[in-house]
Amino acid sequence: MKTTILSIVLIIALSKPIQANATKVPVGEKIDETTYFEFHSNYLMNLHHFLVKKGLQLSKTESDPIKQFDILFKDDVKTVLRPEVKAKVMQAIQFYADSISKSNLLFDPRLTELKYALEATTVLKDLKAKEPIKGTVDALEKASRFYAEFFWQEQDKKNRAYLGTILKQVKQIEKAVIDSSSKYYGYKHNGKKFRVDLVDYATFYGAYTTTEPYINAVISSTDKKHDGTQGVEIVFHEVSHGMIDNVFLAQEKLSKEMGKEFDHNVWHTILFYSAGTFVKNELAKQNTAHELYIYKNKLGSIAPSFQKTLDAVAIYWQSYLDGKTDMETAVKDILKAL
Image (tube, rainbow, N blue to C red):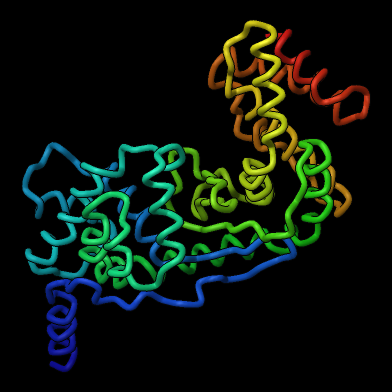
């Protein structure tokens, strides 16, 4: 009988309507740091990316919000919830599906503004006066208590567990990799630490980085592509997006001079190859084998043109890394090969 009463009490407690801002946002979300990095498991960032993912998963085959909820969470939520609770969560997810999820997390300036705003606050209502997409704060508030009760604790554990698998190696090689990146990208490190936020969903690719007002990488802690030393490389890869401007500008200048259309695959492949090479070389000094992310995940197989770019980078950019040529010549040779 005690068990029955306890179960009923639990169901009633979890079935109460979710109130706006009912969940106090956890503080102290910086989970570790190194000489060059700060790693975060931020509640609001995780809630935001959770809703982005659920917005993408929202089934249009069902128009009834309660049925949509049951489809979305059939494997995750076993507790019996009242219909009004489900409806409130679905209002949040529907808002994201309509207004945010299909936008580009990397290139949409509104979402970049929102991301930095979420990182800077612990009180959702403080964002209302400056939310870049009207209605976002209301959606976050509607889903907050539900996310906190059913997902946050486990996701925070996953974020911390992922960091635990890579932190030692990041610390061992970070100075050498950042030094090499600075040297070959023509970048001067300003002494500020790179911020890395760990979440579940971080776009289809598993990670993305914005660079203004500061370099901030968002990395999936659950993406299988980040297992093992690939998880180490992806950290350096992502922050390299804020370091590679001079390579980008060299390609832009040479493309114009050569009458070629600017191809973003070129500088990004250079970034993949460089970060992977720097990490591989430094891990080898720690007696740890590493296969470049771009090869391990067979990214060259995406399209013949991408493989051609990778082959050219492996020849001509490697010549630059070996000290046999300069940056501009290497980029020019790559563009000629394409």
